[in-house]
Image 1 (cartoon, rainbow, N blue to C red):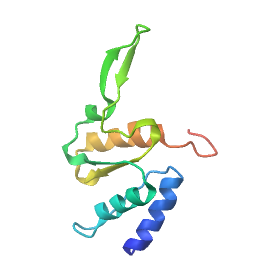
Image 2: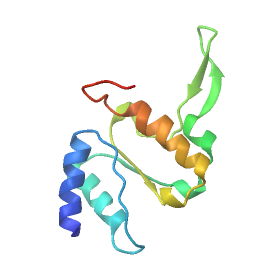
Image 3: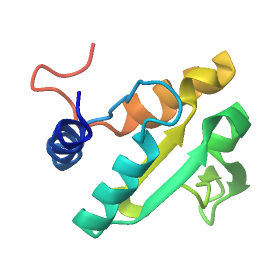
Length: 119
């Protein structure tokens, strides 16, 4: 795909709040297309190197809430209130446990449910 086609597809998918995996060789402009889209949409972009993450980095740290129950302190690098773009660069090179955490904790837990629900 040309960069313009990738940009347009990203625009549609971001508006639909769908996760996207951009795959291509190094140096072809994947990061640049995402950055340009964030600027065009006027939304915050958090660019995180997934290769440097640990699975616990995505969940955050536990703390005791005022109700006496444990809660999770959301990592600062995650977009707040569901707004913005979280760009996990080099996800395919990250350890398998990080990839699994991204899939289960970020993508599946935060994606809109399909019309038929989740199984």
